[in-house]
Structure formats: C-alpha cells, structure tokens
Image 1 (tube, rainbow, N blue to C red):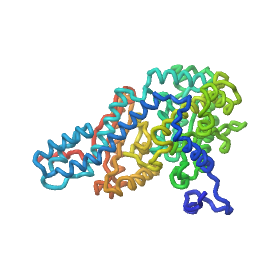
Image 2 (image 1 turned 60 degrees about the vertical axis):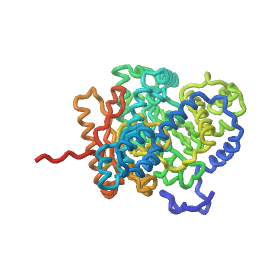
Image 3 (image 1 turned 90 degrees about the horizontal axis):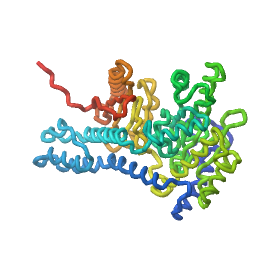
Image 4 (image 1 turned 30 degrees about the horizontal axis):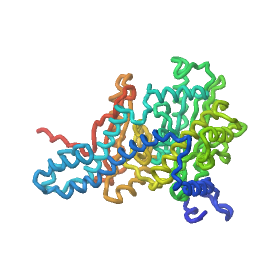
Length: 509
C-alpha cells in the first residue's frame, strides 16, 4: 500500500514505520479478482435480472435529465440575440429537458447577457421537481407504503424478530442508493436518516425509538408490544476499493478502520442509552455494514460473543459472489448459510441471521447490476452529485451520486455536514463557474395544526442562514436555493414555495 498522503490524513496518529492497516487492503484484492471475471458475462443464479433492468432504466432516465442541462443551456446561449429568442429557447428547453424556463430571466437577454447560472439552478430545481412528482405518483421503485413489496418485507422483518429497521448511511451521495439499490429494501419499510460519516445523533435516535415503542403499546403498530421483537439500528459507512487513500469517507479522512470504529461506537452508545434510560429489558439490535462505493458490495460485521460488534470478522458479499458464481441456486444458498451460521438452508436460519441472508442475496443482484451496466466498477469513483439536499425529508431520492444530503434542523447544528457538501460542490460546479443548487426541504404532518406554516418558516429560516454563511457564493450567483415542503401524511410530491432568483415584486408607491 502506498504511504503517500498518510501524514496529512485526518485523525492519523504517528506510530511504528509499518503502514497503517485499512480494511481496503483485502477488498482491493477482491475487486481485482472480481474485475477478472467481468468479460465472462456470467450472471449469478441469485440475481434478479428483470429488477436490474428496471432499476437501470430509472437511474439512466433521471440522471440523463440532469446531465442534459449543460448542453441544453449551451445551445440556448448561442441564440440569445436571435429574433423570437424566448419562444425558441422555451421550445429547446421543453424538447430537451421537459421543462419551461423562467420568463423574468429570459426577457432580459436583449439588454444584458443571460444569467446562465440562474438558469442552470432553475433547471436543476425543476428536474428535482419532476423526479419528486414521478416518484410519488408512479412509485417507480415499487416500494411505497401499502404496496405488495413493502408489506412482504415488513412481514419478513417480523419473522426475523425485527419490528423496525432504522438505517443511517453516510450523507455522501455515493450512498444515497444504499436502501433501494444496494440492499434492495422497499424504501417505505425503512427509517433512513443520512449523516456525514454515518455519525447519527444519539438523543434524536433514542426519541425515535421511544416513538416506535409508544406506537407498539398504544396502537399495536407494527406489532404488539408483548411480542419478542427488536428495533434494529444499522450504520452504513463506506470505503473505496479502487482508491482507498483518497475516495473513502471524507469525514474520517478516508480511514476505513476509523470509519468502522466510530460507527460501532455510535451504535453501542445508542444501545447503552436505551438500556440505561428504560427498564424491563429494553434494548435494541445493532448492525454495522461497510459499503464499497466502487462495486456496491458489502462487508457485514458480525457480532462478538458478548453482543458487541466485531470490527475484524466480517462477511464479504463480493467474496461470496466470486466463490459461488458457478454454483446452482441451491448450492449457493447452502454455501451462504454455512458462512452465516453453519446451516444448510435458509429455512434453518433464525433472527438476525435470516436478515443477513436476505441482505447478501439482495446485494448479489446489485453486484451484477454494477458488473453489467458499469463494467464492474463505477467510473465516477469520487463525487458527482447534481445538487445538495438540506433539511428533513427527501424520501424520493434513491440514486447514487444524485444528491449530497445535509440532514439538519438548523444550519448552525448542521454546519459540519453542510460545509462538506459546499466544499464538494466547489470542486464539482464552482470550479466550472456553475452554481451550487441547494434544495431546502422540510416535511411536516398535515394532521398537526400549524405544521405547514412552521415548515414554511423553517425553510425560510434555513435559507436565510445559508445566505449569510455562504454570502460570497450567493453574491456571485454561485449558490442558489429552492425551498420545498411536503406533507408526509399524504402521498404527493414536494411543493416548491420559492427560489432564490424569484422575480421580485415592484415596490408600490
């Protein structure tokens, strides 16, 4: 392993001259073995081929909508002094992007150059709006509440002794698809909150645990409180097998060992908080998972004999894929069960081991997805997000490298996450004189009086704080915001309540 750059790595401590140990040393070898098989064009017998095709069509279409923005605006920029410019520009935008452009920006083209930065941000925001509309109206990922996939998975979880699945992935956009794609879990059956470094807030998570248990006692939802089931908290950190020293988790200085260790500490602290605060054997189940952002394969950390998380002993889905690629479905099933719990069939697996089996099988489909459509490893091994999502919500975003999440109530408390996102987009966009599109979202419950108004005020408050914190970028037109709200109690898309470049009303005299 090369040692270049280790001295500058965050949280790196001086020690012996031996190179620092990282989990990616073995994963890199696995990835090389995997890539050697790419030309065989062989599909694993556990892979859901039809689902892969459907997911790829959806991903391709959404990303194409965003990636067509720049070439479309270049075409429009070349004709801004032609007769009937506005009509022609609108026609181009609708044909290429499926959206219209703001008239109050276009109609100034005869007196000054077009504000291409504002148009770029507008197009990004409208593409997100299209994405949201399609997601909630058509359920393209087949994971909506009440759907057959969600009901089936929720029943399966109860069979595993789990009444709620709470996953915290890193806010890095390369993990935004970890639920619907990497793990193939219906999005409505999971509580997902993204945080930088997957370092979730323990107090808030305890409060969500309390809310869940309260529903079990008061409403028997999702099951009765007397049932012997657990709340499963999962942390998903990430690493890069292609460039482990630079493309790992920025919050942990691309130190995979540190990312796993810190994730484990958060999980154990959460369990301790629950056990110390509540009686009658209150506890939770924990799981730590590593995600290779280049191949989408998983490393599932096993539990120690005392119920803690083993940072060394893991199950690699990539190793399982490679070792069973030529097996029949029955042979592969037996091999996987043997690895998990020395069983010969999935019917013999119980509890969390039954859930691990499903994760492995689901992830095999994703490994083949990357193998078929991306030649085994994504080309964009680094950041390639299209916009930043800030606030609470974004249930509709489940695509890799589409959105960088900054989950927050206030900019002050979420500043570390947001600063990382802005830094990323300075490289992606600002370096090309393109603005940073920031979508602010606050979901609310329509059942609560005044909740909508409070969500609107939250959007405005965060928007004002962003304009102050990143004033230099805002003043140059290099950061634009879009304010959105959504009623989580109804199946509908996000509603735009304002944008940073909205037409200002003329002052009345």
